Length: 220
Image (cartoon, rainbow, N blue to C red):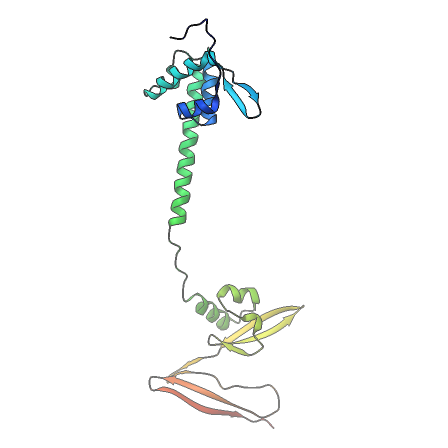
């Protein structure tokens, strides 16, 4: 037992953190519960008054034995209830933080749903069949790559892309470039709005292979 006539040396709170296995906030919470005022010696040194180190050791033994801090007989007056409430509040916050961390980890580990491989095909078919006017951003969102480099009348993904300008904005309409018929699928013959002769080719796809034939349009 320490003699009351002998003043005990102050102890660095860093040393007590290691001795009691506490964080800085945990140590300060115990000091408040015991009514111990920590002494700041310098910007890098804060100490626990030596006369209360034994009290802190007894509180540590009390808690280490599995007893709650609120039942320790050496707590400062009128602090028992508030200390128990504070301990419960801290535990609840820790539980909430743990649950949030687990939920975040599970969300990151969850597999990303696979992208619909027919999304672009369905979108282009709907736009072509319903005469929809699309922006460049709309086509990019559908998965049409390289649309910024398309010229009017370019054929891609089985569709003909028609480029329009309206108030300095590029708009697009599309039409099917591969037509289904009784004999299979075919590319429509090229046509032109000019009066000059135009010679093109069309192809027919069926179970026997590909048939290529000339499609000539001559206007006088």
